[in-house]
Length: 300
Length: 212
Image (cartoon, rainbow over all chains, first blue to last red; front, side):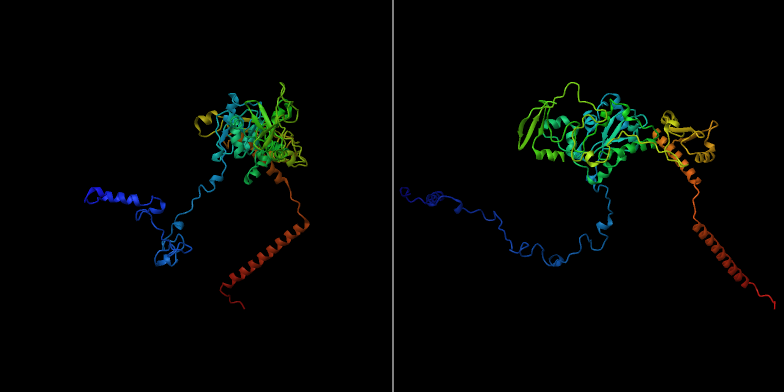
């Protein structure tokens, strides 16, 4: 500045002068500090350029590798250590948590189960004494033979597995037992029906059993739900002969007969409710699909 | 059943609004059909087994034991079943629980076993028949009464079956008898031939005698 005499211009003054002349800062006139960003020094070849990740000289760069698992002569790990396939396919194995006949008798005696209605998975879960987690590969309940000799209940029960002596115990007392398959979404609906109805989803249709279970559920010996009822009648007679009891005539009790004969359709989940129906408990209404395609889907 | 026809759209799906109201007396009960079963899909038992009567209540007629052959049917009303305490160790459980199963029936008057089998059976098991003529079978094989009962019946059936088998004389054809006779004679000839050859060998080992 002229009026200041012969004073030497300080650095700040010079800087400020410069700033007055220089153009405005923008992306086009700034530069990052050196070594702030690493430049990509890639070679341009198909597999990453220059040495292609193969290093320098040696068997590595010359691609002359030994076979996978080879440990330069000593017994390799994959041969040394034996296979122990304890859990092979465990995620595919279905589980059936047990309910003993003794427990069943106790439930009937204490009034937790109503024998005047058919007992199915929903009825057993509604007692809140048994938990079922379909997401952990549990596909229903199996009836075990503990308490076989003292079982006296007359029931129409549907489980997922029962052995021969259990079937005989149920039938010798004038009951009916059926083994049925339910897929995971159906199980989730069945184990807590109130929660399912509150969710506002239509009742799904039950899927068919997987291939390795079809034989079991179509066998009259297992009282499968897909087996021929005439053959089941024959098997009832044969089992009575094997286990030494007179097969009770179900027709002798005409009041209980309709309840004893009650069975679900293979696509049905709840007694008296069709797949595709939407149940509204709050307003006590049921919604049915009207669309022909939907009806065909739920019926097929 | 009373229902109204009100269409309700939920999302992309049209639902028919149907009020299901039942009367106070409940659903009509039929004597032979189940009372709640209304829904029939394409996979219902009627479609899977169109020729079947679909009746699990039928009790088939018991097979008869005729022509001296046992049919396998044991009438349970003619057999007395008894449960007693088993032997052996087991503490309180074995002392209190009756798991040994015993079945008995009067063998001589058991019409359900054919006569020839009955006679032979009486001879075979004479040590298990009481003074009054009751044949007794026991089992304490398992821990369950019912399974032991099944075991006793299994034993009984196997006994009757084996007795029946021993009574059966197989009919052999003339050709087979001829063949068996020829084979026996050939075996005898062969045996004698070998015997003679062996004899020559042994004689050959003797020192020669000075006979001219």
